[in-house]
Figure 1 (cartoon, rainbow over the protein chains, first blue to last red):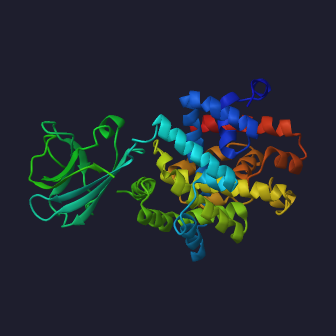
Figure 2 (cartoon, rainbow over the protein chains, first blue to last red; figure 1 turned 120 degrees about the horizontal axis):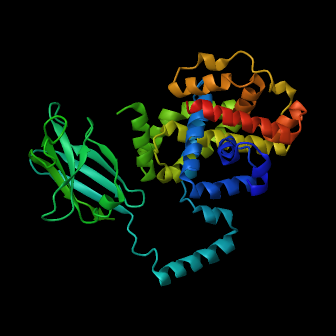
Length: 228
Length: 182
């Protein structure tokens, strides 16, 4: 939306936010709107709210099971042959190869991307009892996922997950495991920074979790997060 | 966990390349999203392609999902609706799909199917606020979202100048915004 348009149309950027979600802006206007939205959190909030409201227009739409072949196509698109990165699909092959080599060289020389480890894994081995779990942490998205590998979740006790960032550092609670012994957490950046080399531990606690903010019950399993 | 929390957790796992979670997410949401794609596209073959595109996008962009307080279904429905509308507009532009015409009942909102909807709070809010608009303006909003109508489509069908249509609709959207924030 250009400044010119803005003067003779009612509603200004607020109306444009709804038009944007409905797809009523021209390409140029949509780009202008997106640029504006990046600087204006209120506008971004407006867009999120419009999306939420307009999505309810699909509430009365009848659900329908897709034919099984659709999943088959998705799976073969994504997983069957090694999937080319999107820029390789878009560029003619020769250009892609040259650009790829140039990129690889640039990355190597500048060192920008080389040391970036994005994935951490931990095997939490039994400490007291037989409980074992696996954990993965994706540094890019800050998401930590924990899965039960072996043992049972006690029915009358809670299992609490802890991040221990080093010797002598107080464990930070990452909350309770769910009934299936799993957990997914989105770690705040400050916490995520402490993941490399940290230990994950699971302690048995009263229902609702540790009353003190530190582990009070026996440690059932623990393991170190290691970059893969 | 509520069902929505579960879907959010599935998206978080998909962001880490978890194929089992991806399949679970598909099993949980494809029926709704296929319904949406079918509603917008109006034909099964197109809806299948849309659904395929939606899940490729979900796989590639799950890491960019932020819950920001709204339902993860909103995120998925928005992807499905936008993919279906983009496809529909390309088909209309290339003449593969009948252009919008009076037959699409743009200005006849008809019996209100929304009244039959499961009464989510937001649904009630949007319905109640759309009901405060003149019926033709509410139909324009629904038509833009569910049928991918552009200002040009609305202008052609209604015989009203495009700028006038736009001025009307923007006023209506502001009225809607004011009503929704009550």
